[in-house]
Length: 135
Figure 1 (cartoon, rainbow, N blue to C red):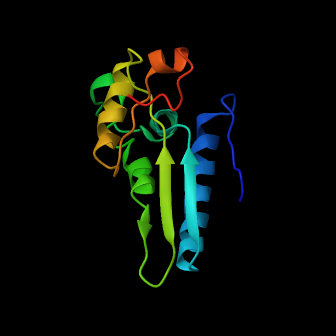
Figure 2 (tube, rainbow, N blue to C red):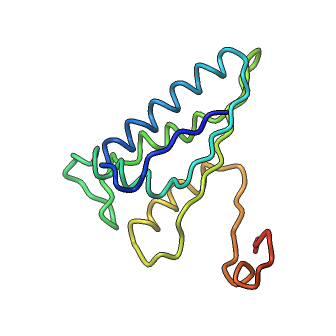
Protein backbone atom coordinates (compact mmCIF):
# COMPACT_ATOMS: atom_id res chain seq x y z
CA UNK A 1 0.00 0.00 0.00
CA UNK A 2 0.86 3.64 -0.27
CA UNK A 3 0.29 6.45 2.22
CA UNK A 4 -0.19 9.95 0.84
CA UNK A 5 -0.63 12.83 3.24
CA UNK A 6 -1.05 16.55 3.40
CA UNK A 7 -0.40 18.22 6.74
CA UNK A 8 -2.54 20.92 8.32
CA UNK A 9 0.13 23.58 7.88
CA UNK A 10 0.12 23.32 4.08
CA UNK A 11 -1.90 25.81 2.02
CA UNK A 12 -5.40 24.92 0.85
CA UNK A 13 -4.37 24.66 -2.80
CA UNK A 14 -1.89 21.91 -1.87
CA UNK A 15 -4.62 19.84 -0.17
CA UNK A 16 -6.80 20.19 -3.26
CA UNK A 17 -3.93 19.39 -5.62
CA UNK A 18 -2.93 16.27 -3.71
CA UNK A 19 -6.51 15.01 -3.42
CA UNK A 20 -7.03 15.34 -7.16
CA UNK A 21 -3.74 13.64 -8.01
CA UNK A 22 -4.60 10.72 -5.73
CA UNK A 23 -8.13 10.23 -7.04
CA UNK A 24 -7.00 10.34 -10.69
CA UNK A 25 -4.16 7.88 -10.04
CA UNK A 26 -6.50 5.55 -8.19
CA UNK A 27 -9.10 5.70 -10.96
CA UNK A 28 -6.41 4.58 -13.42
CA UNK A 29 -5.48 1.70 -11.09
CA UNK A 30 -9.14 0.60 -11.03
CA UNK A 31 -9.17 0.63 -14.83
CA UNK A 32 -6.21 -1.77 -14.66
CA UNK A 33 -8.24 -4.21 -12.53
CA UNK A 34 -6.83 -3.17 -9.15
CA UNK A 35 -8.96 -2.86 -6.04
CA UNK A 36 -8.20 0.42 -4.30
CA UNK A 37 -9.23 1.75 -0.88
CA UNK A 38 -8.83 5.41 0.04
CA UNK A 39 -8.96 6.33 3.73
CA UNK A 40 -9.72 10.04 3.91
CA UNK A 41 -9.41 11.93 7.17
CA UNK A 42 -11.37 14.04 6.68
CA UNK A 43 -13.85 15.11 4.04
CA UNK A 44 -14.86 18.22 5.99
CA UNK A 45 -11.40 19.72 5.99
CA UNK A 46 -10.88 18.80 2.35
CA UNK A 47 -14.17 20.51 1.45
CA UNK A 48 -13.04 23.60 3.39
CA UNK A 49 -9.85 23.63 1.30
CA UNK A 50 -11.87 23.40 -1.92
CA UNK A 51 -14.06 26.23 -0.63
CA UNK A 52 -10.99 28.40 -0.03
CA UNK A 53 -9.46 27.62 -3.43
CA UNK A 54 -12.45 27.33 -5.76
CA UNK A 55 -15.09 29.55 -4.23
CA UNK A 56 -14.81 32.31 -6.78
CA UNK A 57 -18.52 32.59 -7.39
CA UNK A 58 -20.33 35.54 -5.96
CA UNK A 59 -23.13 33.36 -4.66
CA UNK A 60 -22.41 32.07 -1.18
CA UNK A 61 -24.58 29.48 0.54
CA UNK A 62 -25.28 29.48 4.25
CA UNK A 63 -22.24 28.86 6.37
CA UNK A 64 -19.95 30.67 3.95
CA UNK A 65 -19.74 27.83 1.43
CA UNK A 66 -19.43 29.01 -2.17
CA UNK A 67 -22.17 27.65 -4.42
CA UNK A 68 -19.66 25.87 -6.67
CA UNK A 69 -17.09 24.92 -4.03
CA UNK A 70 -18.36 21.41 -3.32
CA UNK A 71 -18.80 20.24 -6.92
CA UNK A 72 -15.27 18.87 -7.36
CA UNK A 73 -14.96 17.15 -3.97
CA UNK A 74 -18.40 15.57 -4.49
CA UNK A 75 -17.30 14.35 -7.92
CA UNK A 76 -14.17 12.83 -6.38
CA UNK A 77 -16.16 11.20 -3.59
CA UNK A 78 -18.61 9.91 -6.20
CA UNK A 79 -15.79 8.16 -8.08
CA UNK A 80 -16.07 5.22 -5.69
CA UNK A 81 -17.42 2.27 -7.64
CA UNK A 82 -16.94 -1.28 -8.85
CA UNK A 83 -16.01 -1.41 -12.54
CA UNK A 84 -17.23 -4.28 -14.72
CA UNK A 85 -14.14 -6.11 -16.01
CA UNK A 86 -12.04 -3.84 -13.82
CA UNK A 87 -11.28 -3.22 -10.19
CA UNK A 88 -13.04 -1.27 -7.50
CA UNK A 89 -12.55 2.02 -5.71
CA UNK A 90 -13.74 2.29 -2.13
CA UNK A 91 -13.53 5.57 -0.23
CA UNK A 92 -13.85 5.57 3.54
CA UNK A 93 -13.97 9.11 4.89
CA UNK A 94 -14.45 10.77 8.24
CA UNK A 95 -16.50 13.93 8.66
CA UNK A 96 -16.68 16.52 11.41
CA UNK A 97 -20.10 16.96 12.98
CA UNK A 98 -21.37 18.95 15.94
CA UNK A 99 -18.48 21.42 15.73
CA UNK A 100 -20.70 24.46 16.09
CA UNK A 101 -19.64 25.61 12.62
CA UNK A 102 -22.43 26.33 10.16
CA UNK A 103 -19.98 25.61 7.31
CA UNK A 104 -19.18 22.16 8.72
CA UNK A 105 -22.89 21.39 9.01
CA UNK A 106 -23.52 22.43 5.39
CA UNK A 107 -20.59 20.30 4.21
CA UNK A 108 -21.75 17.29 6.22
CA UNK A 109 -25.30 17.56 4.86
CA UNK A 110 -23.97 17.79 1.29
CA UNK A 111 -21.94 14.59 1.64
CA UNK A 112 -24.29 12.66 3.92
CA UNK A 113 -26.47 11.42 1.08
CA UNK A 114 -23.53 10.27 -1.05
CA UNK A 115 -22.33 7.44 1.16
CA UNK A 116 -23.43 3.84 1.38
CA UNK A 117 -23.02 3.63 5.15
CA UNK A 118 -22.70 5.91 8.13
CA UNK A 119 -20.98 5.03 11.39
CA UNK A 120 -21.26 7.48 14.27
CA UNK A 121 -18.59 7.34 16.94
CA UNK A 122 -19.52 8.09 20.54
CA UNK A 123 -17.14 10.25 22.57
CA UNK A 124 -18.63 9.00 25.88
CA UNK A 125 -17.86 5.38 24.98
CA UNK A 126 -14.38 6.35 23.88
CA UNK A 127 -13.78 8.21 27.16
CA UNK A 128 -14.74 4.99 28.96
CA UNK A 129 -12.17 3.18 26.78
CA UNK A 130 -14.86 1.08 25.09
CA UNK A 131 -13.78 0.30 21.55
CA UNK A 132 -15.01 0.44 18.90
CA UNK A 133 -16.85 3.48 20.26
CA UNK A 134 -19.78 3.14 17.89
CA UNK A 135 -23.10 4.70 18.83
